[in-house]
Amino acid sequence: MKNRLIFSIFLVPFINCYTAAAQNDWTDKSDSEIEKLVKEWKKTEPKSDTILNNLGYCYSKGLIVDQNYETAFNYYDQSAEKGFARAMNNVGDMYKNGYYVGKDYQKAIDLFRRASKLGDSYGMSSLADCFVHGYGTNINVDSAVFWYEKSAELGHSAAQNNLGTLYLVGEKVDQDFDKALHYFKQAANQNESTAITNLGRMYRQGSGVEKNYELAFEYLKKAAQMNDLYGLFEFGNLYYNGEGVEKDYERAADLYKESAELGFVTAQLSIAYMYENGQGVVQDESKAIEWYEMAAEQNDQYSMDRLKELKNN
Image 1 (spheres, helix red, strand yellow):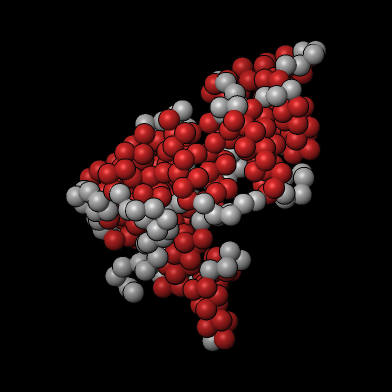
Image 2 (cartoon, rainbow, N blue to C red):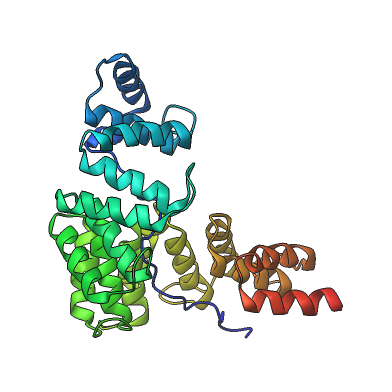
């Protein structure tokens, strides 16, 4: 266990998080430009469905304004009542995640279905998530693939990544590395950081492709620069194991710590292990315990076991 970190393999991540979205590309503007837009939107009466949704997005993300899920929900709900598909998806996300409203998977999936029928790519991807994980419905992989494909055809990068994930893992569908690579590249071309990480992992591990540390480094460096928690961890693995680079425990520890601070459980137990054993950091059992405790809070069994041993010594 001294030569190769045992935590370098983890499940390929789905993008299955709060997927609230704005309708237009105004989110790429500067803060000052967005601030002007928000002021204009607030003054506008009556507010269009798009303006209501965009204001909801600002409050849900804390963009320019203070984050306030209640205000976000009210704006989204008003927009959805006007028949705006993207807002239906966003209200559904709030029910799925329990933001301001109580978690209600049935309401969430009903809203995702409505948004999907109106052609919203986010609604389709969210509906597919429900079929993959059984949110408000029975798990149905065929339905999940159907809706992910519909969403991916419309250019939705999270759906493209998630299709790639299904085909790479091969537990719920027949494993198909070519399809995995295809969908990851589609999403990566849209700067989807998790897909960029997944491409890096495929080349690092030689999963369906010839192992190529140079390409792995290129992809994982980019994902890490985008602050992707999985990308930071995988980039750290290159330095920990000396894969295509000089072995550098200090650099690995820095990257694991960045990923751990973003909440990635495998990175948390990895940096804990390094503090416990003095790899790349000054040996510090108290810091090791702190990180193991964070991982244990996410129900990581290895961390729970290490905590028992360390605290009983």
